[in-house]
Image: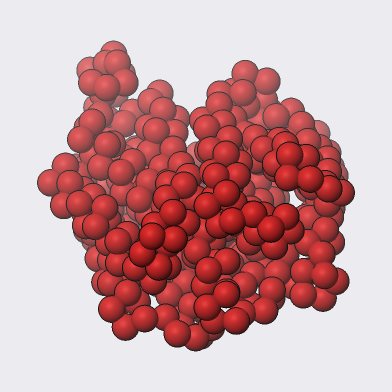
Length: 411
């Protein structure tokens, strides 16, 4: 998101922590972290929910994919809202919607497949936190510290680990419906801390019209970057939502064991996201993504052939390491091409990532129902990673010529 608070002199000479507003940065991280936790909450609970409601494999896949799709769409909505009422207020509204939705689901019960989809739409507001938390934090920081600010706030995607670790155990103790109510407790605590700590940066950028949000779509480069993020982030969040189902259905693990396996995979992908940006700075985003797509495709092919928990887990960790690195690498490229439209492109690229996650999670369920195996779903997504690699190879020469001539950093 474009910087709004920077005088160009004293701030430029300040260290990172002195150059912005630390309480807001912490509030943005906490909000993002807990939001991502509940965004994928249906994944760890899916085996128990499916058993209770007698869901088919395709219904299970669609259930865990719905929050991802809703989050993708709502990211664009939240981007418009942030411009008009400010990120702090937009974030508070989003948090209240999620808390009220979870409380209602707990109190009334979720008793049908349609009910799980309705809950998934509500959880989409949590996934759309990306479009709020990042501008809330980054508007306080000068250009030379934007990467650090967005990286620290963006590390909130580690909240997916919390869901995988704690939701299955709590469901075993209290029942899966009770987990929906229990989630409201940390969410409410974070909402209070957020409201007390967060502060909108002064002199925000002028609001953009909906038409202005669509302007970058006239450039082929925008579509390429969105496509690349649909593979990297889409793969990350799609796997985060689907792995509990995979490990329980494929290897007969308990929900708690599947949660631990999922947490290990998701932790790997979350940890390397900021490292992916640093790697892209060092070797160039194109080179980093070239390795990312090749490794991810290889790892997913390995998953499709894995005959043991250990082999599958190793391949998933490798895939998540690659995809997490790719998430950071894509956002190293975005500001080089769209420096003036970085806020708009953050929303559009994030939208594409959500669409990719919805596709992967839902396609795995369909593959299981139609063929009796998850393998075709993984192989198709591996093919998409190879298609992204081919596309990157196709455009990289033109990017280096055009972006390099403009004096941007290395690709």
